[in-house]
Image (cartoon, rainbow over all chains, first blue to last red; front, side, top):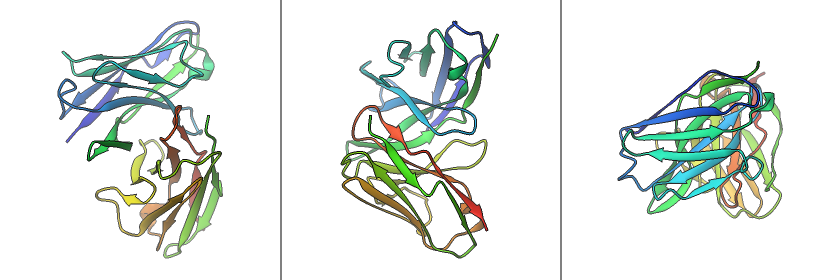
Length: 123
Length: 107
């Protein structure tokens, strides 16, 4: 059973880089034909998809964040990373990593989520 | 971006009621749609994918339908555990987008 666990600093200063890691257990990134996404949710608000990465390294990003975001894989550590540069208070949110459901080689919604990690941008 | 509009934003209902939440996309998304349930402080849980397919382990009182730009989630007989916030999500066109959520409250 695949499990995801986000980790990283809970407080980031404005203009700095937010760096989070999602550790995957129960599956091997290098062998798993899957997409791994980051999704965020400001307190009391809805969900925003940030982007995703495939094992090949291919990525897709939210256009509004594309200039500031990088998602990468570390297959040796079985981790998916998120970097968001030049953060402002508007980036304060709970950040989730998630994987997509795969059925018959087709990809659907997100069936496994991490518990989420809260990041506050403040000086 | 495809805008996903859910209605209602808040729904008050009682245990045993049948309720329906609708989700309208700003363009045709066929059945590239998922529904999630989220409780406070928790990650969302997948309920429905491909518009109408029940995810493994989800109770059969949940059902979904989708056609073109219109989708709906129905709970046939509300149980106490169902009071939560529900989100639709399209995964047809980047960037993937979610509805604003429907909070299902106890009447």
